[in-house]
Length: 165
Image (tube, rainbow, N blue to C red):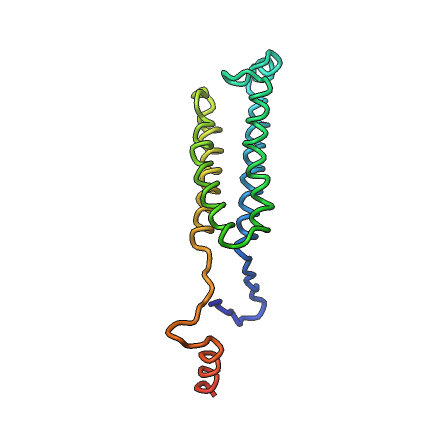
């Protein structure tokens, strides 16, 4: 399972549960998502557009702010859900939500100026990498070992201890 390095001063490898990895990935995604929105405020004319009641081509009325809150609340809640849901539901939830956020993330570049290609390309690329990590971590979630062919796990462990000794 784990490789042990017996050299003096070698660092011990800590293995995190899948739930902790998923929560960390969702937290990273959330911080990146919100920081990209914050940095967009520095684009010339962006704040003037907000003050005029528009973000991109959207009116900043109640529907817009509710949708924006929803888009932000989902990754925020995924941090908690990744650490509290039962494994089977947790895995399915992470697979579904991360998959749904791929087109949402890609859409963020729609209508942007070519002058900001690097900014949006880099940020969307990082967000997609985080979503890919979430999908991989959830997809490869370790399975519990089950007894097969009528053999009890305790019996298997007991036999290996007898044959080893």
